[in-house]
Structure formats: structure tokens, C-alpha cells
Amino acid sequence: MSRARPARHLLDLTSEERRAALVELGLPAFRADQISRQWLIRLSDDPQTWTDLPADVRERVSAVLLPRILEPVKQVSCDDGTTVKTAWRLSDGAVVESVLMRYPDRVTMCVSSQAGCGMACPFCATGQQGLTRNLTTAEIVEQVLAGARALQRGEIPGGNSGGGADRVSNVVFMGMGEPLANYERVVDAIHRLVDPAPAGLGMSARGITVSTVGLVPKMVELAGLGLPVTLALSLHAPDDELRDTLVPINQRWPVNEVLSALWAYAERTHRRVSIEYALIRDVNDQAWRAELLADLIAGQLVHVNLIPLNPTPGSQWTASRKEDERTFVRTLMARGVAVTVRDTRGRQIDGACGQLAITTL
Ligand code: SF4
View (cartoon, protein in one colour):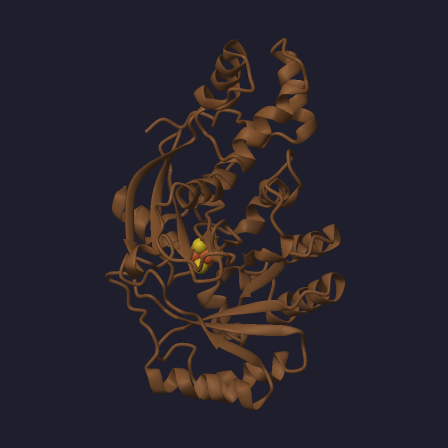
């Protein structure tokens, strides 16, 4: 497998840089906006159909700025076709995955930000692979656009007509990788998603969620940008003793530090933050841990997402018993903590983080 550097793509560039790139090609700068509108707004990835541009412009721009950067290598769907998971081969052979989930009122794309992941969480399939590399801005945004095109082509059933489910309304950085370990490109990708056309797709930043295992300096930096995206902390344990093993980066930034950074994010952005907590049988699902978690977070602007663990083959980790899950939920609710159990869409399709890409390799 070659490891050539990924080619530069239109979506790696800001509006200004796109104009400069066109001028470099000897073309008028204003063509950059036309091309951006075709790609990002009309969702047309076939330059032959761009009749507002002369044929020679289309050819030169496609050859230089529109390399094919994602190749679908495997696609599986469930939930009557409304959940579609795709494994993508990148230009250098690395494989990542994205998941489209169409609900009656919205469409969520879960995207990868890295090929593999260096955070080594032992219960996670991606964590077992180690990090291959950071994705480029274009590789991240193209995952979203691939979903948007599939919706536009009518390939995804479901959605109420007139509702918000005709286009991608939400993007969650919860696929492969630790988004804040690829900070610059993830922030650039967010800009491509939320900046108004023709610079970006014009999505609402409120529909975007960035997850992290708790890279505190980057959480602080993200808060400083003032973008109203939701920050989701993958906590998975309220005590350092257990979290040190479940989320090894905890040895660097322990629970009290990551939670302080999370509260600071909520205060700075006025956005409710999320805590992700994978419930793992007999590991982190005891009622006393729910109490301890409540001690740490009650009264904050926070919502807890409990995730029934999707076991990976051959793993010692498995989902909690239903009665333990219920006790955990009740304990948090009794302390006034907002909590939901995440629906486990994609469970039939190798839905655990990273699993599809692994089976494809
Ligand atoms: S759980 Fe997330 S941060 Fe941890 S190894 Fe898996 S992908 Fe990386």
C-alpha cells in the first residue's frame, strides 16, 4: 500500500485560496465561486454538467483541484435503508468510514477525522489499529457531501416531506479518530460546513458536534473560537482509577481537568455540552459510579448520552445488562441530570466504531 501524500483538493482551500489557485492556473478568479457553488451547493461532482463554465476551464480545474479522494469500497445498510455505513478507501490506501442516519426530521452524518486512532481506548476497534494518519479537510468534508449527494439522488428512503430530513442537518465527529488530535483540519472542515455559500455549505453550527476524549488544551482553543458547535466529552468513567485504563489519555488530563475544560466550554459558548458514557457490563455500570458521576456534573449545563456498548468480535467487553442500564439512568435522573440512552442505529452492520473498516482491510 503506497503512502503518497494526499493530493490537494478544492475543499482544502478557503475561498481566497481557491481564487488564488484559479489565478495560478491562468484562469479568472471569479470562476472559483462558480466552481464552489457547483460542488458545494448544487452537489454536482461531475464537471461535465457545469454548463456555466467553458469546457477547457472544467477540464483544467478537474485535473488540478478535483482529484478523486474517496473511493467507496464497502457499503452496508440497515433500519430499512435509512442507516448507511460506508467504508472509504483514501488515495493512499487508508480506509475510513462514515455513517448516514436519516430520521423523520433530520439527517445526521457521522464522520471520521483520522485513519485509525492513537488514543488506544481498549474497548474500541479503531483504537486497536493505532493511528495511520490525519485526514485532510477535503477528506472530512467529502464524507458529508457524499451523504448529501445520496440524499439528493433519492437513494435514502424515509424522511417526512417538508421536514428537515431532505439534506444533511447534523454532522457528528464520532467516526474513526480523535477529532481534536487533528485540530486544524477539523476546524477547517467545520468552516467549510458552516460558512455561507460559496465558501461553504452554509449549515448551522448548532447542528455540529465534535467529540473528544479530553485533549484539554485543544478544548480550550476550540472554546476560544466562539463557534457554537456542541462539544461532547467521551468520559466513560467518573473516577481516575478506571478512566486511566478505559481512556488512557486520562493519565495526562485527569477527570477533574477535563470536566473543568468542559464547563469552561459551556460557559464560553453558551452551548449545552454532552458527556458520552459507553455502558460496559460490570466495568463502569455500577450504581455507585452513577452516583459519583452525578456528584461531578449535577447542576451543570450538560446532557449525558449513555451508549450501550456495541461489542467487537473477540472482545472481553460487552454491553451492560438492561437492569443495570435502567438503574444507571434512574440514578442520574434522580439527581436532576439530563440523560438519554443513545439509540443504537447500525448495530446490525458492524456498528462499533472502526469495525467496518477493519473487516474491509
Ligand atoms: S474510542 Fe475514540 S478516541 Fe478512543 S480509540 Fe476509539 S476512536 Fe480513538
